[in-house]
Image (cartoon, rainbow, N blue to C red):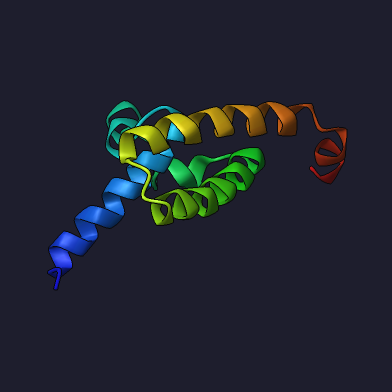
Length: 98
């Protein structure tokens, strides 16, 4: 059985994998560069980033289930994030929702 601290480490590690895939930095790196901002990197995400993050979480779970290594997952997730962000930023329908 994993201890609570081990579980927290695994969870934080996966959260940072998603943060790096989408934002290009870990939560800690973001806090170091933004000491004046409250909250965390995700609290300052755009609508497009939230949509992509949600998708990345689902895709990451599938990749984990398939036994894909973390090194391979971060590359795949980053490529997906770039593709999805580009598509959403260009979306006229999304602009109408804002």
